[in-house]
View 1 (cartoon, rainbow, N blue to C red):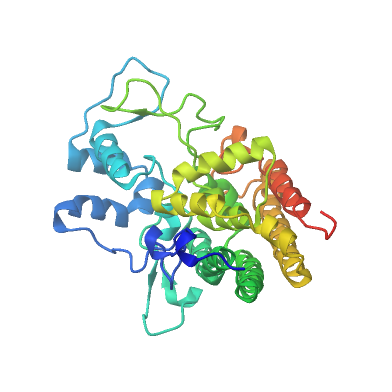
View 2 (view 1 turned 30 degrees about the vertical axis):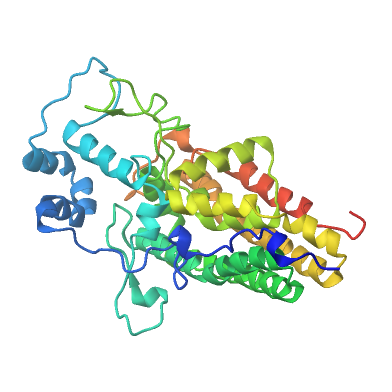
Length: 382
């Protein structure tokens, strides 16, 4: 006999809009601003010339010209300092956004894209970046391929919401469809990630781009951190931009119930503090939802179990492929750089060799998250 409906308390359904997630663009910000208001024109002028100013060592001169930055003397002669004229607004804007004051994934990717022709398909030939630092076309390709990865993840993100709601509503057919869509989306992510090989030069990524994503936490090249003048007299430490700051795989793991090793889990949870707060809240909402694994085991439904395992296998394949990409762009590139560095490229600090941009020992981390994904596969006897 069914209980009277008035005695049942059904949790609210999971919706993307509640977490500022777009039905069309997922975690990407739809139509990011290309220009700030005129009051910020000096900032925009510097941004537009940023790669050139860095390459000719004139960035500090231009900042001083616009902001009258005075020489810094805080008694930390050996420590790098971000001048007050940059540190104060950077920290305040970051505080308003709920993000740490450093370049993060949402800055570089989620809000740093535009279409050349809004009427055309969203492919890499129809995309451009809003801002760049040194790295040329390889940096542009790195950012835009990552934008496309976020875009093809949208059906998977929508499948998460459908899946959570299907469990709440006890709709097995809807849950099966959600799992099937999630698997397809993960496979699309893997295929899209392969475009890195077409648009990003490994030597330039290793020797140039990675330096700007390395941050100043767990970075042997900047072991003490960075002083933000006018904010703190002591150095502050923040991790650099990392794929681990994308909310996509965090959300997939939360839904599928993948549990990572202690070290990997601690790093991944720390990376959530580098996400827009609403995206972090979405991941936590999925984590708090009724367990998908428990639901599938309790249902005894072989189709659901098979579809769930196929999602895990697709996710493990994605992580294996990511491992091969990272091997090419960091490990192999590092070995090549030790042998004969291309004359037109600078050398990254030796301390960064083998380290991911977020500060992890990259191969061991990626192998661990891949292996833990496979360990989550369910068997009918579980």
